[in-house]
Image 1 (cartoon, rainbow over the protein chains, first blue to last red):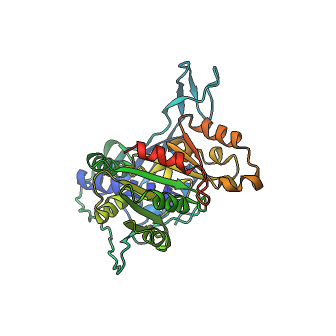
Image 2 (tube, rainbow over the protein chains, first blue to last red):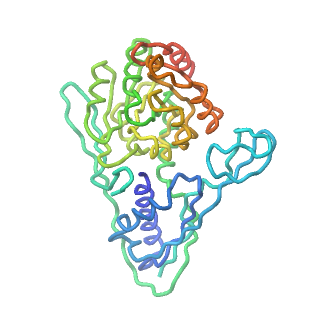
Image 3 (spheres, chains in turn yellow, blue):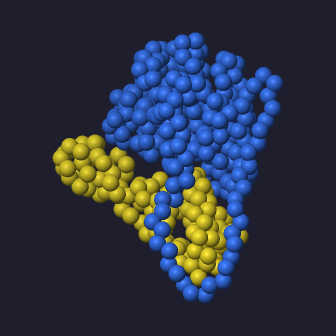
Length: 113
Length: 255
């Protein structure tokens, strides 16, 4: 799956930041992953050790903050949590919705020393 | 190496323009070395940076190039075996004399698909992703440089056959087209919703098999519309040509 690409992307970004900060090492990394981001936590977990091996993130601890997905119904403006992409509005049953939260896939912060 | 679908680091992708007396160009990507400096204090760097930013930035650059040259770029995605290549071949065979077409073929291995397109005398570049399970925007950037497409043309990008991973990677395409064949079952759209959510057009292929399969077409369309109510559908058979006319009309309107 694409989680390896994602993990390698994280390593690249972390490397650049470490270089910019002129620091010696990365002690921890905070990630933010939405439940609708397309990244499976288990798959990311699985590929992580291989992706970070012999890189700036090899010794860094990893914290992940998961964001629950929420949508706004485009018919009746109801805001509701989304578990599956094809969930309909609980009030009017419309499938037209704007998923405004839960697609996050980002590095929140790095702790370097 | 990923245990789910086998994608891995391996070496970089191979991007080859198929020509009569072909020779291959290989692009490897090298990465900078870091310089270490000693500081003992701990610092928190607040980044808030999108992990796919690099891909998205280059995709935006591709899109700007396509817009400026009035190139209509399609990203064709599907599971393996849906008939993407046959669908593309049929489209090219029927329209290539009226409009300029260019093709980028994405597969893990082989130039088989590009050779099929080359046989139609349409300029084509094959991208072999190696262990990679999807195309990324930098591969399109490199492939387009080799193709050097004319203004007012169509660029057809056939992604790696995979209904999961390509969903996350914007290539800079004008529209994304998901191809599903009726042999795949009515509930494919809700089994692999990400791809249907991010697509604009849904091609339902292999309609010539409907007398034998008796697929519930309403059910299939309903499932797809639950995921993405804005999808535009075309029911076609790339083999018999049934339904292709409507697709061509739509395609020609776009340029």
